[in-house]
Length: 204
Image 1 (spheres, rainbow, N blue to C red):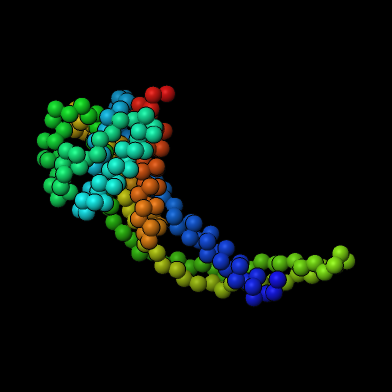
Image 2 (tube, rainbow, N blue to C red; image 1 turned 180 degrees about the vertical axis):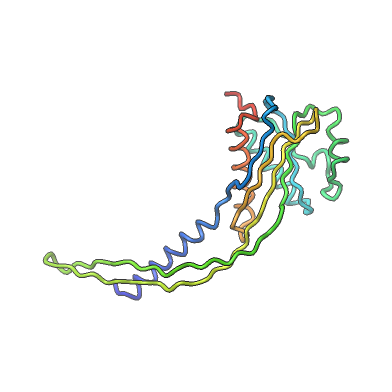
């Protein structure tokens, strides 16, 4: 393998690693009402986005993932069809007479532009000649700056009986170019944290 080809392969692998890192979604702040001891098994899920089609997709994905964890959930659009009508008053009116334990609201809290410097990297590649000896070749890639967006997401869980906040999480994702990955990762993280905190009844 010649040096140019090896260098191209290395840089491709490096780029893949960087992009894989950008796909992460993580919690940066989490709060829970320590006085709350209930187990939730029917949650109204609301994605606070203006696009009705995207809102439906997010809420349906939440419901599907909750169901996979044996937790009942209802998409918000079935009770409040228009995203533009979302408000505290419309939500409170919609849940009257419904068998719902809590309301989960997810929204985009902000977008930050980040510039990050990637320092130079180098490594040594060993090439064998016959069975007698080998020599090494050193490769390097220059340092560079990269810009990306950090999506700040907020998810709040409210008890329907008291209308009080019982759990909240702020998370961030750095894969703005792939919104579906952000949505899937956010949903998975939310349910993982609710299960870990014992707030949902998974039937186990």
